[in-house]
Length: 359
Ligand SMILES: NC(=O)C1=CN([C@@H]2O[C@H](COP(=O)(O)OP(=O)(O)OC[C@H]3O[C@@H](n4cnc5c(N)ncnc54)[C@H](OP(=O)(O)O)[C@@H]3O)[C@@H](O)[C@H]2O)C=CC1
Ligand SMILES: Nc1c(N[C@@H]2O[C@H](COP(=O)(O)O)[C@@H](O)[C@H]2O)[nH]c(=O)[nH]c1=O
Ligand SMILES: [Zn+2]
Image (cartoon, rainbow, N blue to C red):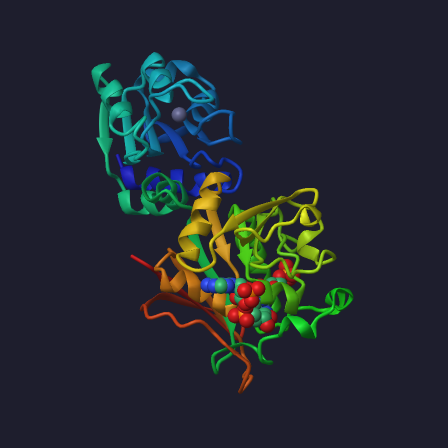
């Protein structure tokens, strides 16, 4: 049997649950009998069925299960969470073989799911396309193993390395009424922008710095794709962002991170959660701790340069997506500097998307 072929199919369908299954990993499961797929499933929204249950329920003739193989991207669970253990269901349905992409590193499950299957006399194979499965479950593994969200840095720069054509805006240049007229200056093209919205729909939260809000008045939502808007996170050390900024409109959950002691009663707003950190050191680490507290599984850091550089300098990032637009600014706010070799590059019309990984 071609195990890699069926695990590839599991990975393909597992993509459907990214962005909706969290904090559960989006697992893919495929049931095969005599080289024919007889059932498929991926993880439902949190609290509902796991992939294995959906795949088993999809099999029209349950009698075939006893002679079938189930393929899964991640070790079947063995604990009672929101739902009963999938390993127990596989034992109960008497599946013959289980082929697993990678082990679960959740201490409640790790190795225990496999043990349960083996004790019931089921043949278990582990580690088929292991690296690809770990990559697919990167958000889940980062939270489990590093106790922080999966961190994606993202920005657009000109060919000559700028993110904005003017010097940084000083707070005194802005009065609260004027922010409504502010908008981003686009470097990347409309196709790249749509790709960014797709990316936003897959990740749990999105963060920007204070100057970015003042200069761009961003919305940070998913308008050009489908799916949920990410939780907005904004740095506002001394709470200088005007209350009429789009980011504070309460349309999605928003977390404002300010300096210890700067929050006054009158700053509080509906649907905005204020969190205090110490802005003098380890800002990135403290932000991660705040996000971990809010159970955030992944974060896109969208800029500006100072905010992105904060995460780079603390070596707190997993991947970086840099869109290089087809233009030059000659001066302005410099792009962050990343001293890592890029792993891939693709053209989006005249833009180039460079992807870096931090191993
Ligand atoms: N091309 C692109 O992809 C993007 C471009 N931009 C552009 O970038 C420009 C803004 O970039 P930039 O000026 O770097 O600003 P940021 O948006 O990174 O905001 C910087 C501010 O955030 C707070 N802050 C962030 N990190 C730290 C830190 N480590 N320590 C203390 N305070 C911190 C500070 O606020 P405080 O001063 O109150 O202490 C600081 O002034 C804008 O003009 C925007 O248009 C922005 C995003 C993406
Ligand atoms: N200028 C620029 C970007 N800018 C980023 O996008 C934010 C605006 O988001 P929204 O208000 O949702 O459209 C802006 O504040 C900044 O973080 N992004 C890019 O992909 N390409 C670009 O050229
Ligand atoms: Zn399960």
